Amino acid sequence: MNTIEDFVDLVRDELGLPVTTETIGLGFDQIEGWDSVLLLVLLTTIERETGRRVSLPDVLEAASLEQVYRLVADDPAELRR
Image (cartoon, rainbow, N blue to C red):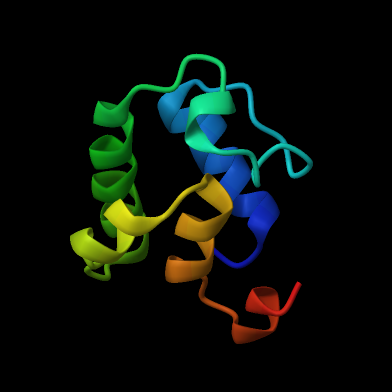
């Protein structure tokens, strides 16, 4: 996962959520179709796709998909966007 666009594609493809780079910063409660179980599915998917473990407590503290992305971004330059 190299860019936020890659992350958005992953969320759309794997979770079936209608997110875009413009809406990725919305709170979870503002995402159409969001369910808290999807956070666990996303965590598992990220770990499978990246081959890295992700801290569940850190992910649970995230308030948006963008914050989840910032926890798992491969490229530190992406974190400054």
